[in-house]
Length: 93
Image (cartoon, rainbow, N blue to C red):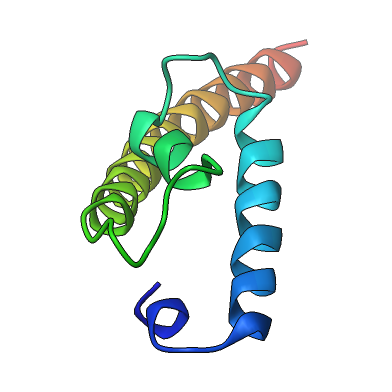
């Protein structure tokens, strides 16, 4: 958002488009998920006056990515175990 603070109208249009896209992506999540990202996507968030929203949203996204990366590993492990059980069961038939 630093680029938006230091630039002309084109960057403002790009920022507004990005806010709309972020808001649309967030609309599919529960209302209490990613509050900093929701604040960042809000039309009232002005990067000329708000220096923290971007940092908070970035950290929030980093944490969520890590959380889902761990969850994906758990699901993959469970799926592999299930496949092994199915393979053993089919070998014994």
